[in-house]
Amino acid sequence: MWKKSELREAPAPLEGPVVATITGGTVIWFVLFLAQLPFYGWFAGRGQTWWVWTCLAGGLLGLLGVWYVRKRDAAIKRDAAKRTAAAATPDA
Image 1: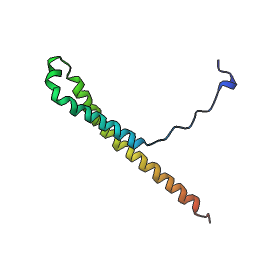
Image 2: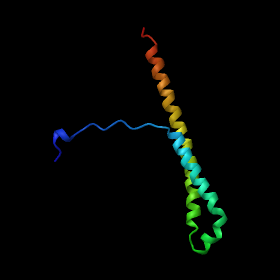
Image 3: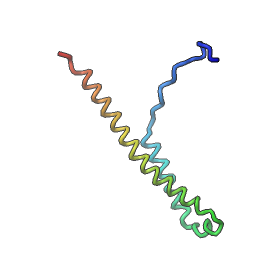
Image 4: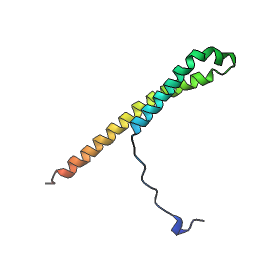
């Protein structure tokens, strides 16, 4: 059973350079995919082609992630601007 002294509020989420982080990860996935392409025959001979396709899937899903976080970032900035404008406008 939790004691009252052990209950704490959840900390605020950390915000950082989300777009740059997702973009960097996407680039890494695509670089890994391109680096493995010359060795596709080697992977195929060992039944390990999933390594190549996993990197491609990571890159493609990363593109979806970049699109999503850019839209999210723009929405957060729009909301902040709207709140600032509403706070600056005197009430009548």
